[in-house]
Image 1 (cartoon, one colour):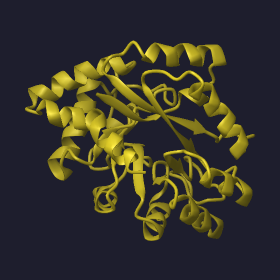
Image 2 (cartoon, helix red, strand yellow):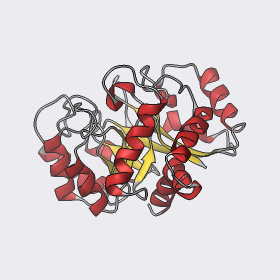
Image 3 (tube, helix red, strand yellow):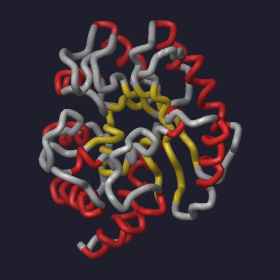
Length: 271
């Protein structure tokens, strides 16, 4: 079963009709069990109420595939928004995007959590998970000092390729020690030098599992949020190719199912 930890479809710039058509089409994928639809707010104009309205489009469909929701980039939020978000049913919050905001420093930004950011993260962590994707190192460590309810929904690994959006082995160890989970993103520039393909995805999965085991890894595709997908991957049907490659490396079906969705589902079911 596939359960995607991060999909940007709701804010991919599509019309409502196009979005609904894609969501309805997910029911035809027997291997797909669930998708986390993140509402990306960086383009501006968002409020907590506006985000809730955007998720209503998907909630009204009631598909077979389980849909859960998250919020990416809290730079729009004031104290009132934070209170409204605390009362909502989002599974995780990603405090920053690539650049710094009123919460803290993004992957390409400077500085750690602001005073407002510390208060906001502390409040939100009581109700949901805090997603460390898009944080710079200082903001990550500040966040880990405040709460153990951390994950990284979509990233790559600095041990394979240095990139501002990738995380170090030290950060991975901290997330695992907190009981969190790490999602591998299907973003080519995170995965390797040069043009990424399915083999690069498999190498990244193997890198993680050889060092940290298969129990804390999941997939956060970033479908709808990147144009830099690895060659040979365009949607959920292509997980079969990844599964075949992992099988050739000796991965059993139980481990593959855990990485593709079981690990993540167990984590969010505990939220």
